[in-house]
Image 1 (cartoon, rainbow, N blue to C red):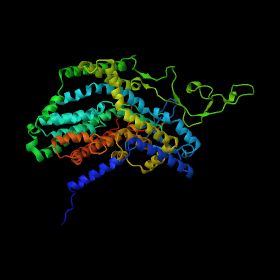
Image 2: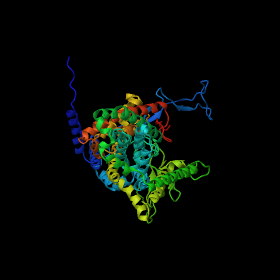
Image 3: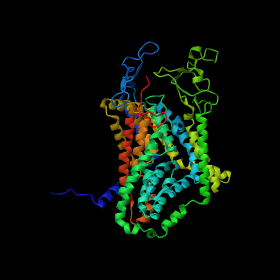
Image 4: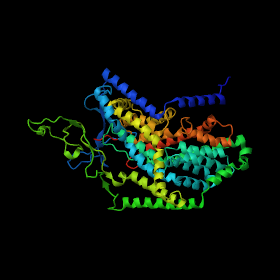
Length: 625
């Protein structure tokens, strides 16, 4: 009886080397979006020439009579039965698709109008990205706090005061929350964790692995909002409005799920480290690595370098006190009746007007002989306060199936100031810490702190310019709507359970992580396609974003496209001289598998409860009636 041949370490290394070589040959993210934009131009031109059309459909909830406890219909004030959305066995509202309007066809970008639009809107395609403002403002405060050392000191303090038995879960949990500090988690936590483990008689590579797993594998989790949340918010909202022009997504749309995910990542990382990774490492070289002296003075020097000075301890105490006061002040502004952030509000322009999205048709003014004023019948038909225009633009209201919509919808006042809250919640503690430690002493230091945050998002801005062209080309050509209607209709007819769709989407994002690095880059490609399609089957954009977080995070620790892999490899080689990239990936693979299984199961469990995954962030999309 013959056994199946097992792959040798050499063959596994060859596979990993192949993945690395392929990944290194892929274009930069900005170039990928140039290629995608060109692909959209080509497909739209072909579709226009071939006469492609797609019938628009509108998802509508199936309505049933609301019944009282006795089973009798509940009547409204008009004496008619009240109708409510019918909820299916899965707990989500049942949806039907109704044909709406005329078939739509691709709009070519290679004719005179298309070329003119592409050139005239190039700047607006970039500046109009909703994610830009969210990321920019949030990173001003976060970047300043990082520049002055607040985040690094906080991570070091938590690691040093942790008991030996709880070292693993605390290290993983700190890592899962370190994304708020940009690159600090990658640079500070892994070497610190390795040194701490060695100092207490544990295997240093296990500490390194636990820290890296938390920082990279738990990237999409955490208790705090980040600049990345703002990016996801903007693109998710834009994609959702393909189906529902009034749909809004807030920056805390995954807040509850993110917090729970941080705990799940902590537990999974704890189990893998203490029951699988560390015992395996101890068996291999127990005699050498159990002895702290085997590392010479390296671990002691690392711990000495990482220890908090008296000024850092004092700065950390005062910074945390300042953060508490800032959050307490905002809480008072939100919950005290009559306070500025209490109740419902409507964002306005300085002149008191609001921005309204409304379809219009531009007309050519025709003046009577000898007069310069246009004829009365060609005067603007849209309400004057609905249009922000410079005279003498003459427009008339277009006939559409939807009325005008507000660019910023009314809602709880606090929900309109989430980004300023994030800004001050990090700015003030960062300034206090900088002042106490001496890193903030002048106006130049203060401005340099802001520059630090801006520098960290410069690569994002470069990618965003080309991403903006791709996203808006996709919208102009109407390929986004055509794909959404076609794919959504197929999903509705397939009637796949939502849990199956969620797992398949997570796997698709994981596959994409080996082809395209960066959370923002992948979401810029996937959001315009999958969010509208999933809305057609009743999945909310917030739920789709939560699934995206999982797929984007769990393979960060093994994909060769992660640029921080080399930084972690340098630390690993300090304790394992002959370790290579394959060694690191093999070390981290159990974490990827465990995080995928546990985190996806957590999402499915959350979905089964029907509970929102963030403030005003439902699991289900119920189309407007």
